[in-house]
Length: 436
Ligand SMILES: Cc1cc2nc3c(=O)[nH]c(=O)nc-3n(C[C@H](O)[C@H](O)[C@H](O)COP(=O)(O)OP(=O)(O)OC[C@H]3O[C@@H](n4cnc5c(N)ncnc54)[C@H](O)[C@@H]3O)c2cc1C
Image 1 (spheres, rainbow, N blue to C red):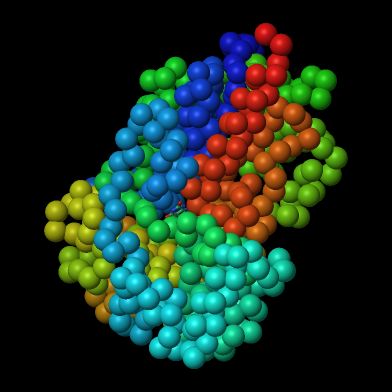
Image 2 (spheres, rainbow, N blue to C red):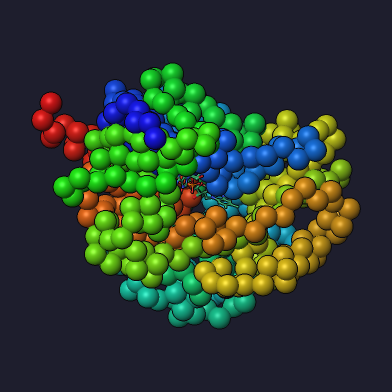
């Protein structure tokens, strides 16, 4: 075993949360080591090449204009994203509805229920702080206003598209917090090199500012002294190494981190609490390409009444370089039932494919690129919104980042960037308080 240098911060895992934390601490002039198990950065939001098509594994739509973009600007790294226009549309009973032109919830729901205005008013109440109690599901909440099947389908598919959960699984409080209070994904873009390009750029920025990133380096344990974390052990090229640090930030998720810490090091009963609290959310990702364009919508389409399909995007409408010439490349998402528990992968995937055949007759001619099931310890969201753990641990110099410790009602890479901002600020405060 060899012991390497000592760092201000060691970050375990180079997913969205880990990279953003490393970027912030590097930008603040700290000595940072980022350790990643895989041979690439980006975690669950990478991309792969399949027969000349750049296919995304996880996130495709990266939010603009908030914490995520701020992180890049701290290191002067350009955020290479192209915004589709319109960004989102709904496809209901075969017709496209573009709410970005105005009309909002009223326009969307008005044709199906007389209660559209009342539902809209509830969003306004939520903005004013009047939110339902945390155990009420989105479906139960909506049932108070309408039983209309299309309205329920729209809400289910919004829950599925944003949170990878069904409306009977997602707390209404989380749904309303996101759509009424937070940004609700208004501005986003696709990376023309696949989402992997975004992470590679950020990693280059971290290195250019003195941060160290080691790939294929699996953290196998944490070291402690007097109630503080003092560093990590990790394996690289068959060697076990130890690195020391004043602070540690983990992007591996609370469960995996508790196992790395061993025993009850993160606090009494921590592991059991993490097992009970965290509800990983699953989705099914179908990547395909067609010669004929299926639908005239360059952004993300959210569907109305479907079995499992919730949303879809034609990435080449905005980023043609993702596919070889002459191809339209799509990604479609489905959310299984249940999304927060065990499900039959084959049956659920078949229901999603049936939806695609029903929506788009041309789908039967599609070239299938990949079907991925994101679940368990490589899920769509490590915790469904409303079922997150705190970022803090019982140790004063160890914090979590990533999508298991999000702010209430948050989701996706933007949420991870916010966890990184919070953890990095706490690490900087801690470092400042330590004697030189
Ligand atoms: C299909 C799909 C579609 C999505 N679409 C969107 C979208 O359009 N927009 C959006 O914003 N979000 C989307 N998301 C969500 C988004 O991708 C995730 O929320 C985000 O990528 C999770 O990042 P994270 O910080 O939690 O880290 P993770 O991606 O979980 O990364 C953690 C990293 O830590 C590494 N690691 C773990 N343990 C160790 C260890 N012991 N030693 C070293 N390294 C370790 C892992 O290898 C991994 O690279 C989508 C997700 C999926 C699956």
